Image 1: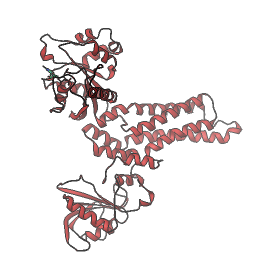
Image 2: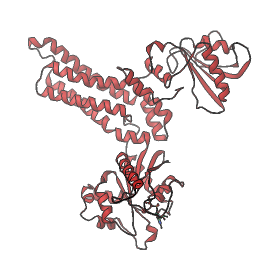
Image 3: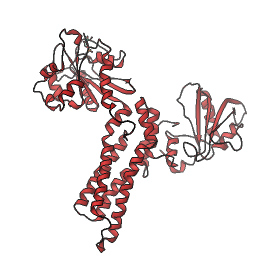
Length: 476
Ligand code: GDP
């Protein structure tokens, strides 16, 4: 996608969303920016001031006809987002005007930018590392306040700083191990084994902590994925509608009508929630369509952060339902006893407990009191208030997280690399403990360092670049 020989081109693209808006911004970046733009924006001075906007008429270079009244902001080389000379033209937000201006720019020698190429250039010019480039995308795409907050912290370098500390420690050990190789014939120990082990333990701990933050980081970035599951007709679709605050799922009283996975997003207290309603989990079905639906629902349950297991409180838990519950992880399960409007007696979590008597599910719950208090809800799809009651509890699960101070990773590329680095670090520790030679230690630790370098983009190839920048769209 990106080739070094094109990196000196001057590129242009509309950086605001496509469609009609009040204004649109066209970004031009590269060595010929000013000389190209001056030909259509004659009002620009010979030496514009950086970070200053100039107002005037943008004209067709050949006919001299006016295209639009624009504001051109100038950023000198080294002081822009990309690190190159940049001009941002704010024009009136008509796609026709944008297209005319782009045609002028391309006619004058600029090239239409590839997806993410502005951010790519910022990275190539050392304005940011790869982790920060990725957080630019997360920030643009943030769909909740929490996600935006997290992306901004990552853009400001929270993850990068932590990775650089790890990198420094690794480099230190590596340098000493390599020095040790040179002296190996003279039986000189360049560095004490205990010191190496201490440093490795610090690295291991940092990596372990970062890897462990992925789940929370991902939830903050993408929101909670919640699957509603349970037997047909217990009220999953009705509850989904309550959570999504609209009529999304079709509600009928013929068992098994929710055949496909229906999903929808909603936001509560700045956190995004994606709900998936699946086909009723029934083992014995003859209908093929429903079978496919059930397969999908099993897949969706596996990918979710939490499962909302719904049952009909009027009927109580059936053996079939207990079987389904036994297959779920209590750490990720909420039990929603639905249709409480149909029963006159007051239910308590103990009622559920009695139904679950001796079940595998019950045995797997660690903190039973806590589970009953926070994970069991008596609800009715007829009562809209249950939405905030239940979602409040989920948000609370993450409230004690010191968002301001914790460094969180939220990107699967980082998770993969850091997991690799962690494994290599552990293997290095084992080698040191076995008293193996410095060359083995250096070899293993180098792999860990490569994983860190790849995360930060200090080492990269086309594959890595493609993976990161293919997510972007044009103009970013
Ligand atoms: P699903 O198959 O689990 O998705 O169940 P539905 O949402 O389609 O609901 C099945 C039937 O139960 C429908 O007739 C709903 O109107 C009804 N229903 C769902 N939730 C409640 C509830 O809380 N109270 C009452 N009274 N009826 C409900």
